[in-house]
Amino acid sequence: MLRVATHQSANALTFKLEGKFTGKGAEEVRALGTRCNAEMKLFIDLTEIMFIDAVGEEVLLFFKRLGASFLAETSYSQDICERLHLP
Image 1 (cartoon, rainbow, N blue to C red):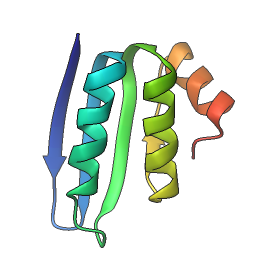
Image 2: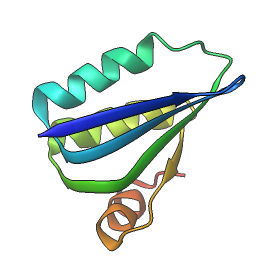
Image 3: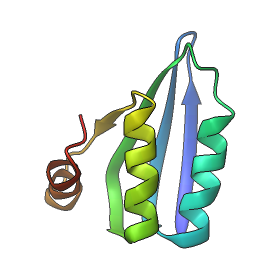
Image 4: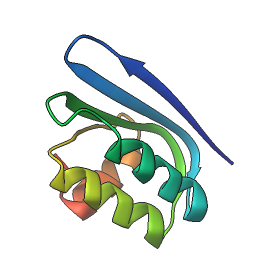
């Protein structure tokens, strides 16, 4: 199961992802990301992610191409960021 919480400030949008970032859930987060104002800074918080499949990894790479910054405070989320070269 995936839980997505969003927090928006004047010039930034944060997606906090919790659980399993896979398949349809990851694609739905991608769709949310495409609706964002391009001028806003985008942050993706991966700290509470437990598992990411190939679809989830592709969505994270999509966010990287949009210029997103990634937050990772657990060993698993840090490993994902290192492996995918996420800033």
